[in-house]
Length: 291
Image 1 (cartoon, rainbow, N blue to C red):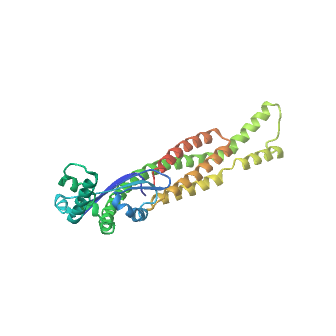
Image 2: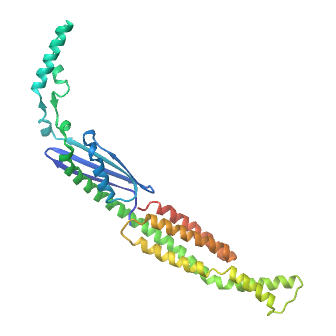
Image 3: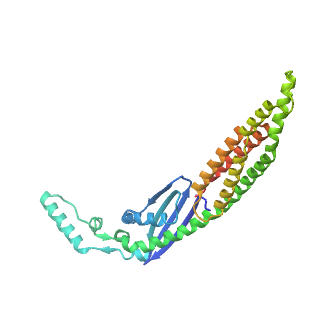
């Protein structure tokens, strides 16, 4: 199980050029990838997305790709002498045509587009891709490691909270049989205070108690809750994205608790259901952090 928050960084070097990839991920219900690339490598974005999607299934992820050249690489800057001659010739012709004065300096020529070509301007995306991919995969490994470590902490917290809920449900299961007994006692006391004396085995009283027992029976809800708890624990142990599944399980547990609270018709049980629902809300919030 993984958290959705993490950071990863990877680097690779090719012929004097160092490529760096940084990954930052935060919580998000769906997969949302933002890729920041140098302009000359923009066409690599679809490939980067494919690699990321093969590893990360959920969360907002920012991918930042940069590169820089070493001093030795910068020495490979090239001067296009033929282009410089063409610029000079065109400038002199324009100067004569306009009758303008002034010198055409070497600085002016060197600043003309294309006269000096640096390695960064000749970066070939196809040649760069193997090294960008290598840095990206290293960054993903570091990111996944961090997300898995955080996921272990989240799993531990969820296990403890769910244990508390299960313990309370066991208390409710123990209290459930006494609900009908207390109802029968209260019913007989109310009838006695009202001056209505009925034999203990009166059919009308038995029918009333039977109807109440049927309406307040929570055995099915308790059984389904135990099943949900087991499935929840099973998914916590899986080494794959389980966030959406746990969200669904949490919703199902919440529904059963609501039904249980409304059917039980007992103060002691209702109080325990409230505690369970409060704990499930905390669990739901934690699950928002899980991939």
